[in-house]
Amino acid sequence: MPGFSRTLLALAAVGFALFGAGCRSAGVASGKESQLRADQADRDGHSRSRPWEIRSTHLELELELDFEARKLRGRVIHHLRREPGCPKDAAFACDLRALEIRGAWAGREGDLRAATQRIVPGTDFGDGLEVALEPGDDRVAIDFETTAAGTGLQWLEPAQTAGRKAPFLFSQSQAIHARTWFPCQDSPGVRASYEARVRCPEGLEVVMSAEKLPAADGWQRFRLERPIPSYLIAIAAGRLASAEIGPRSRVWAEPEQLDLAASEFVDTEKMIQTIEGLYGPYRWGRYDILVLPPSFPFGGMENPLLTFATPTILAGDRSLVALIAHELAHSWSGNLVTNATWRDFWLNEGFTVYVEQRVMEALFGPERAGMEIMLAMRSLKEEMAELEPRDQILHVDLDGRDPDAGFTGVPYDKGAAFLRRLEQAVGRERFDRFLRGWFDGHAFRSVSTADFVEYLERELPEAADAVDLALWIEGPGLPEDAPIPVSRAFETIDRKAADFVAGSIEAGAIAAGAWTTQEWLRFISSLGDRLPRERMVALDRAFGLNARRNSEISCAWLELAVRSHYEAAWPRLEEFLCEQGRRKFLKPLYKALAEDPELIALGRRIYARARPGYHAISTGTIDEIIGRP
Ligand SMILES: [Zn+2]
Image (cartoon, rainbow, N blue to C red):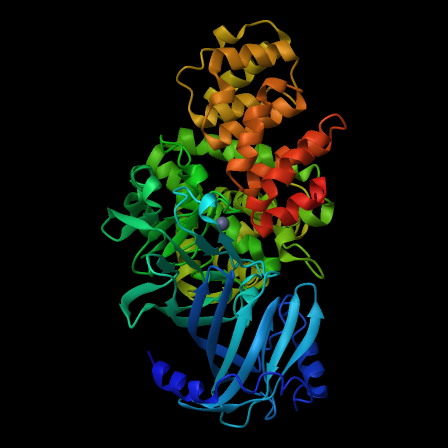
């Protein structure tokens, strides 16, 4: 903890007195800036920071959680490094959005003075914050307070948690939400280590994407020595308990969900060892999993040392644990080797889906892995049919757009298909060595699409010759040489689905008794867009689909129910939309409702009821689909 407490002591003496005094006339940002910026044309367009001048390399965070006011008050001290060619009068530039700044200081460790700061108005994605420096300064401290408009933190009432006893807070920083809960150089191309101390109401446990240290003086303390980008800084606080699930893993959850979570994730250590066998050691020490309340907008978030996961994968039969394989795989692709900008997001997600599929194959066999690939590829094709050509491209152009717009199936499943195609071109053994070299050679660095192409052409020239790289990386659509496995079991299911739709067999003859989740998902997606009412009734009677509690099956079934106007499903539809806020499930259901003139009113009524429980990332998407109530 280099100088943390000493610096804080110096800061405490300065207090808040200077807030407001420095918002004008800071002697920063001259004509040189635009020149430098022009030289950096392919830098991150979603950040106002200038890490090529002055880079933050370590953060000291001091955070106070005020659940009553739903505010986080804090102080961040950035340790600075001047890059070669940095102008003498350069200011420290970072990002913020929906944050109130209470003051800024600059200087050297333990010796800080009030500094001139100004806010540089930016775009919808945030503003710049510049703090003037003097030559030799290597620290900047900023006091701040979050506001209700921030999107990075979600504060939950006790009623929105599983136990309904205590409030809960969690962060979601990816893609560019970290800047709404602390001022930072919010670009995936900037990596910093961090330490934090957090104060919160008695009885609440705080966890972060860092090593947890012993608490001291009422502060819960954390440290991460490996450098990570800001989007991986994460915090959660609530009534949490934990259980060991492996030699380096524990699961954190509300006590009500702990046993279920611990048994669901029992294969975690096997998963870690499988990836280590393929791509080298796990380099982060512990691998823990936090089960969040159901409003978490994503399936999972790969926060280092501590995956955040939705409770909707707790199916009771380990059928949805591919998500854990996915988040774990990010410990290599994404967290270790990181996309340099959000345009390069496929380098994070395509690689991760590929690794996830390899884990599933190693642990559960090629049949199940193949089924999961086939399901993903069918969804990708359906989604692509509705995406504009520009959004079907791996190296997507996000200029002027929120990077959350790039969160489609394309970087994930088209990206993984591209890697499977490269593997096919050179054989698995060769490709495994190639990928291991990629992770080892770029560990703890941020990489661009151009870096990958250069590496591929150098290290795997036969693959670069055999595969049309430009078509795969810069072209829309799914190239015809995308490898898609075949599954006998799915072929049988497709035939049964066709026969059932045609009326040539009855539900009782489907013989679905032993179907896995994956087989059910295939069957439902093979029934077409909609079914006649009597076919829906027959299915529901035979298999109790309205009563299912597997979230993936519920989502697929309910979408079919909406499109088929199967009114007996409405109570379950409303319950499902109100009990969880995972965007993947909300989006197809609200879309089906919004597209149907007879059902849009039902959709709006349910949304008005459910919306207060959703995360801002989900409401951002659903508002656009069905309208803000
Ligand atoms: Zn991912």
